[in-house]
Image: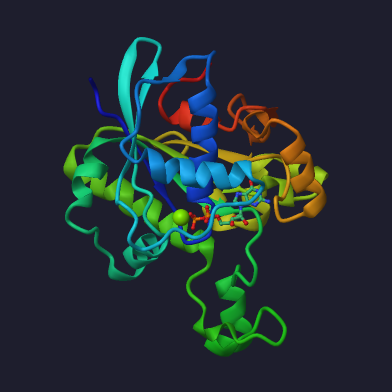
Length: 284
Ligand SMILES: Nc1nc2c(ncn2[C@@H]2O[C@H](COP(=O)(O)OP(=O)(O)O)[C@@H](O)[C@H]2O)c(=O)[nH]1
Ligand SMILES: [Mg+2]
């Protein structure tokens, strides 16, 4: 059995845990396609707790700091047996990486064995100090981009953090074994964007909202294997009463979609597992 690790990375509230629970709903029910389960994950109770909350029409709550560090899902891709290892750690771990500039020692094994890393960020980021240079120009560290709010204590802009963490992962991997790996960027809660903004596609979303990250992705396309995805777990917001009723009346494990640019043009797939399948070389 090969062990292929897909790391889930990204700051707190980026949608990592809910994506894992939603992915499990699809994987557990999967009867067609190349990707299947191959036995029961050890952390089954934890996973089902999250998935069941979604089935009852709510997003799962913030990951507790004491959850088990690794969620391992045994899978089959065609005849290939593998384990999908997801360190479902709270986002603070990834923000700490940005500030501490070093990986916790035991992560080296993960970085060594990862066949891919999915970096998560939400489609809408309240009060993100998007353009730090402009902020500085107009008011230094006391500038307030959001009216009436003091942004001087807020952390780095999301795109800065993610671009930096991607570069740190690439560099650490180069030091450890130099094997190429897939780097996916998953923009979550894609349904929160207006229809026309969804259809510009995830790559142009980055161009509009996170220029630094977009430019990093585009200029490294020939040396790094990167793709950008826009994912909606159920096709709407479970916090909206009307939509929740729709989900409860339907079949949640068949809802949701992924926008992507895998063939260049913007496309919408009904498969929320697309980023995982892409990272595992298991596209149908
Ligand atoms: N509307 C919508 N919201 C989402 C979706 N996925 C995640 N969210 C929101 O993002 C929040 C944070 O998600 P969570 O999985 O806890 O993020 P984590 O801290 O990265 O594990 C959730 O509570 C939801 O409100 C989605 O597909 N649609
Ligand atoms: Mg979480």
